[in-house]
Length: 125
Image (cartoon, rainbow, N blue to C red; front, side, top):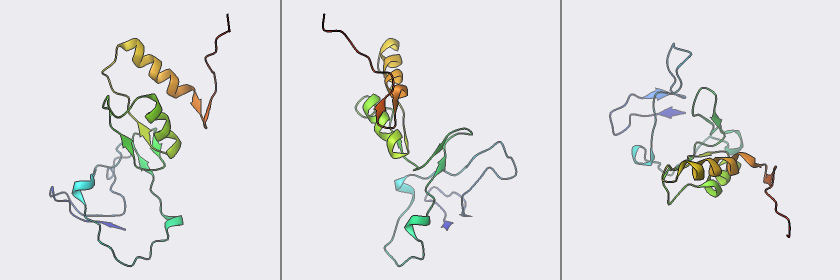
């Protein structure tokens, strides 16, 4: 796989660009949809063997390189949970009081493999 020069004038690289010789750095080249143009053509790539994972931080690797926007109209707990289940990550927005932000984080953290592991319950009385 080859990554060509972006319209922003970034360098071309073969494979996945990394931090070079520094093992503490992760990929240095980030591309968005506006930076690349995909043309229809025959390919030798077998979809089942393609690795779409992406190193977000030193400790977080995503199965798919998708991150939802930290906008109040885009990501709250439901979207963050859906992104995690799909292999991506959701960034919660900050347009909430701190207590509500903490509640959103707690909801996401409690959701595991499609099940809420510590459900909040109440009694009929």
